Length: 322
Image 1: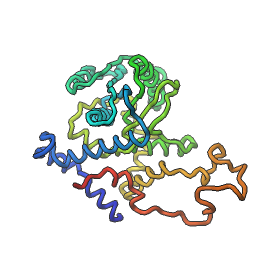
Image 2 (image 1 turned 135 degrees about the vertical axis):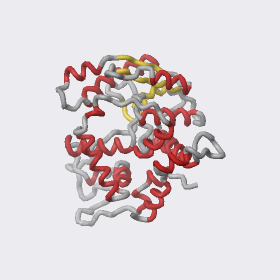
Image 3 (image 1 turned 45 degrees about the vertical axis):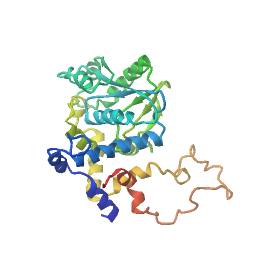
Image 4 (image 1 turned 90 degrees about the horizontal axis):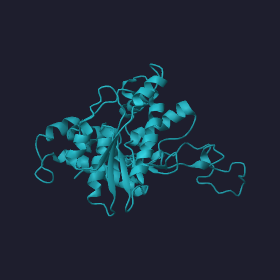
C-alpha cells in the first residue's frame, strides 16, 4: 500500500475502536459519543456537504423529501441532512417519508416513533406493493426492478402532494460504483447512478447526497447510533442477485488492491469522451487533423497513472486526523 493510502486507512476508525470508545464519552462536543465517533460523524457530514455544494443539490427555500426505508443508509442520510441544516447558509425544509409496502412482519410503529423522537416532519405512506411484486415475479427471480418502479411512482406522487422540490435518496458511493459495473457487465452501457438527475416524469429533481460517502463508514456510523434497522424481506433475501455478485467482486478488489475502489470513484468524475467510442458524445465522424481533443494521440502510450493523492481523493478529502 502506498504511504498516503496507508495513512488515510490508518486514520479511519475501526469497528472495535468505535465500540470501545463509545463507552468512554468525549469531554467536548456531544458527551454521549467518543472522539473517534465524532470524527466519523464529521467526516460523513463533510462528505454530504461537499456533494451538495459540488452538484448544487439544495438551495434556498427547497423542500427536501428524504426517503427513509429503515436501512442504515437512509437513516444516515437523514441524520446528516438534519445536522447540516442547522448550520447551512440556506434555509430548507426536510420531510422524511417511509413507504410501508405491507411486507409480512413489517414493524409499522418503528419509524413513526423514531421520527417523533428526533422531531422531524414526516409522512408514512401505506401501499401494498409487496403483494403486487410477489404476484408478478416468479419465486427466486429478482424483485428489485418491479419493486423500485412501484416505489418511484408513489414517491413522485407524495413529493408532488407536499410540494417537494428535491427527492433525497440514500445511495452512497459504493452503490454508484456497483451500478457502473452492473451496467457494463449486464447492460452493455457505461452508466452509473448520477448524484443528481431529473425524475422520470420530469417533475422532480432527485439527489443522492451520500455520493461521496462509503458504505463502510455509513455502517460504522449506523451501528454506533443504534438506528432501529428494519430489514427488507424482498431484495434482502436474494443472495444470488447480480448486485451481490458485483459487491463481492469489489470487496475482493478492495482487500487485495487497496486504493482501487477510490481510483474507480475518481474515474467517474474524470471522463474523456474523445477517448471512448460514443459518436453521440464525440464527433468521431467529423474529426479531422484540425480537431482539438483533450489528450491527443496516446493510443500507443502506456496509461498514465495518477499520483496517489489523485487516486484516493474521497478518502483523503474527508478523513480528519486531528
